[in-house]
Structures are given as structure tokens and as C-alpha cells.
Length: 145
Length: 110
Length: 116
Ligand SMILES: Nc1ncnc2c1ncn2[C@@H]1O[C@H](COP(=O)(O)OP(=O)(O)OP(=O)(O)O)[C@@H](O)[C@H]1O
Ligand SMILES: [Mg+2]
Image (spheres, rainbow over the protein chains, first blue to last red):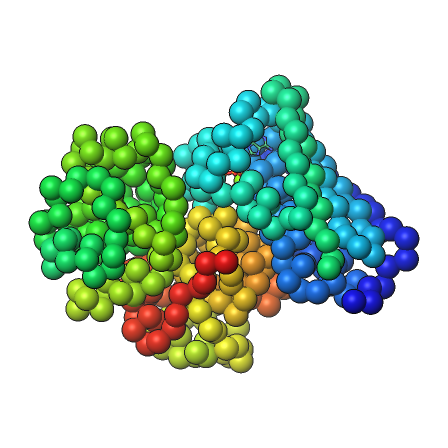
């Protein structure tokens, strides 16, 4: 696949907790960027889903965060770090169906406990790191081939 | 139609209240939002959902629903099953998505 | 199935456009939980949902969903409609509940989305 990338392309988006009106904007823009670079649509889909789930978790659970992307010929790396409550038990949080989303969030269609599993499923490399009271960092790599 | 017939025709996995399958189903309701089900589901409806939060049991009990079909292969926490057993609410599971389960039941109930 | 056929089956009104865009829908997904929508394989899909907020439009875009049908006559606010127009995602609103909408479309031959 001939991608139109020389060196690396990187950038970041600021995310603000509770801001549902623009939630998903960062992922949408990243999707557009990958489309313009000529990345295969299945790969874009996976990257967009993984990024969107990470973005939504910052909107829902944290005060603020930052989404950083790093694109090369081979892959896209996405790092989403937030200033939030952190996660006490990561292996529990990774279980499908586990959610602490409050009622008002569930009434908006989130809180299925599928976000982290979706991120893991759609990325080739996934890692999550969290400190209670400080924040959470999710890192994902999606290979282009 | 009896709930037992539905279990058989859709190959549902009966998780709780096995004694409650003789109940007659009046209709069906599809939703993942508890407030929506509280407002709009009818008595003896079978509830089709992806929602597995503990409060689904209380909602089903308050509304007098015929049972809950949890779709899409969703894991159901032990705590939820225990509560459903206590409250005599049948929980049934299936790997099929909600659209298809609703579609099949719609044809059977007509 | 075309959008026009879907609208007829559901007695639905088209919110975003004045004419039916030429879209071929191949399967449908009924859900209110957005992560479930993102879990299913949904290119060329129709989403049937009871939620009308802007993040539903964004979820549809990310998942590759082509059209959204809102049940129980629900209508999104103007900013959400505008967002859907920008993203080229036609919106329909039907008086049917999610059960009836799913039932009628399934009966008419539309299959459900696949599990990946
Ligand atoms: N950035 C975060 N900060 C704090 N807690 C988090 C964060 N991300 C996830 N969690 C915790 O992990 C749980 C599981 O997250 P996950 O994204 O899998 O599901 P969810 O957000 O509850 O529901 P869904 O993503 O399906 O809408 C959350 O309910 C929350 O308790
Ligand atoms: Mg989440």
C-alpha cells in the first residue's frame, strides 16, 4: 500500500470532561486525516472506533485530557491521557460488561462496559496505565498492514 | 404465546426463574434505556435489551414484564442473576442481536 | 433496501433532506447503547435508536452507519440535524417503537448486523 507519508505526522487534541456536545470531534478529525492520507478504510474504521471509545471515556469520567496521535508509513499510534479519578482495578475495568457509569450517562447510551474491550479488539497493541486520583493513559497502535 | 415456546423457538438460554416459563407473553419491547422501559413497556411484555445493569430486575418487576432477553452474547453479572432469581424475573440470553430477536418475535406474535 | 422503502414501511418522515438520497441499506442494528453499535460490523447499515443527541450522529459516522431512524416520533434539535447534514447521514423519524420498527423491517427482508 502506497501511503503518502514521509517521516511522521503528529498532533494532538484537547478533550474537556463533560462536554457531550462536541464529544467525538477529535476522533472524527483523525478519521478525516487518515482518509486523506489514503489509509485503507477497514484500518481507518478500527482506528476511529478505538479512538472514539477512548475519547468518550475522558468526556464521561475525567475532568480533562489530551489525545495525541503519531502516524508513520507503518502505523498509527494513539495516546489518550487524562486528569481524572483513575481506575482502581484495571483488570476488572477491562471485563466486558463492567461499568461504573452513573444513571444519567446510561440514559445517554453509554455505560455498556464495552469501551475498553472495543479499544483492545480494534488495536494491534493496547496498553492502559492508571493512577487513582491522578489519571489514566491509554496507548494504542494500529498497523497499516 | 407462552414464554417457554419462545425459549424453544429462539433457542434462548434460560438463566433464571425456570419455573416462570409458563407465563403468557402479551407483546414485546426493545430498549436499552431504563426510563424508556418504565414509561412505555406494557405488562407481560418480553423486554429485549443489551442493558445488563442491576436495575433491569427492578424495572422488570415494577412493570410486571414477562421476562428479559439479553441479546448480543452479553455477559450478565452474578449479582444480577441472583437478584432476578429472588424477584422471580426470567432472564434469557442469546448471541443474536436485538434487531433479529425482535424481528423473529414480531412474526411469532402476529 | 432503499431509504424510501424503509420510510414507507415505518411511516417515517425524512428530517434532514427534502428528497430521498439514493442509499442502499443492507442491514440494521437496533440499540441505544453506543458502544454496542461500535461493536457490530455496520457498513451500509441502518441504526434504529431512541436517542437523538449529537454524539449519536458521531457514533454513526465512526461506525460507518448510513442512516438513523429515531423511534417514538422523536426529533433531534436543530444543531443535531445540522451535524447530520454535514456528515451526510440522513435522519428519519417514525411513530413506531423500536420493537415494531425492527419487526416490520425484518419482515420485509432486512437482516440484522453481523457480530464481528
Ligand atoms: N479514563 C477513565 N477514567 C476513569 N475511569 C475509567 C476511564 N476509562 C474507563 N474507566 C472505568 O472503567 C469502566 C469500564 O470502561 P469502558 O469504557 O469499558 O465501559 P463504560 O465506559 O462503562 O461503558 P461503554 O464504554 O460501553 O459506554 C468505566 O465504567 C469506568 O469505571
Ligand atoms: Mg467507555
